[in-house]
Length: 566
Image (cartoon, rainbow, N blue to C red; front, side, top):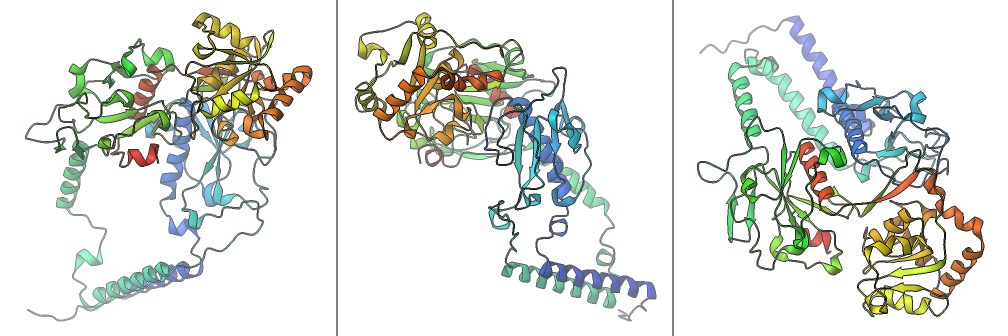
């Protein structure tokens, strides 16, 4: 074979020289400016646009009060609101990330999410439901942050796609630190240089190797292969193998030659199967569309639909130790099992046989996949804003169905009643009440003891949201104040931890009893919001359905015990 070198053309040398310069320029930039994200992250537009879309999607489904301390304005409300005829959820991108603009393609065309208006027009600040603020573009003195008061309905969203190592924590510091160089940068640069040199050498000494000289020339067989791969990926959208502790064998959900058939192609609804009624009590399966404006859902308790169900909702407190009432059939590849629990870890048995059984979680815990708390504060209608504090004839009340002397709430109560009168109801006090009396009694009290039976993160229940809705100030025992303030205004409740002892709390309540003006300030939030409880069962099922519609990727709960009980 003739290995005669093919003469190089001037244009080839020019191209190679330019390529070489680009290589060395890239290496130089990596060394001299490792934080230049426009080079490190050339695909930023993809995640940026997706972030704003997901923000809009989240706000469409969670139009409730959430609080993060506003260090910029310290203002709890504003004078302007979004117009009532506004049909779209407005998400304002306050600053372009790293100063790089991207196309604001409609969410409906790219993500099938409707009712969103993504904008960078700061003139819409007063109407924006959400303001997306990119952390890496916030200066130390916060000078680029919004300076006008935040409307009561508006949420600010902290936005960051960097690791903690590459993200400065103290935004109040006026100095922007330099991220130290890591050895990995040098290794990457060295590899990059080696590849460039090898490429140039190959072009000069083997110019007929077109697959290297022209790397952007596609081959027909490559296109066919990628198409087949895409189809294969679609067919195995949620493929996984999970250890089935029930039958003590591994279930490959595409097992045998013919797996359970998924819903037919013309099936328009997402099926959520309630595997067992919680605590054996059924509830009305009303349409999600009428109750929560969530469409395309079929909530059912018919186990004959197991093979077609996209999600199976399993209530933890009804699972026996041997898992005998769990599904025994193989799990279809497209199906997800959802762990469902609204009790605290103290009152929930930790069954270690459930390791890696579930795909998703739904509970009151904020870190759940589908977060459903015991209540919300939603925006008030015009008529609801005309709130009047109910007439009061009692100072402090407590209604308790499960009284245990060793609970913290019980010991605290015994100390509190030494200094202030408490109207107590329940079996322990031989003063039971019915459901009809509950609302009347709670609304007639100035303060209600919203004492939880156990202390855990995010665990505050209807004991808080019911008094708020009935015009009474909750006095809480539960997680730290900061945890409550993520869901309800700081001036809407009293936390026992704010006082050194029950006596100091009692003195404070007595003072508020005679200071009408200070007492009324606990209801300032009612000008904009109302408290609503979460119906147990249906709301969880509908929220699960919505989540399944929007999140079709693979997932598994690896360590349920460590996450919930740890």
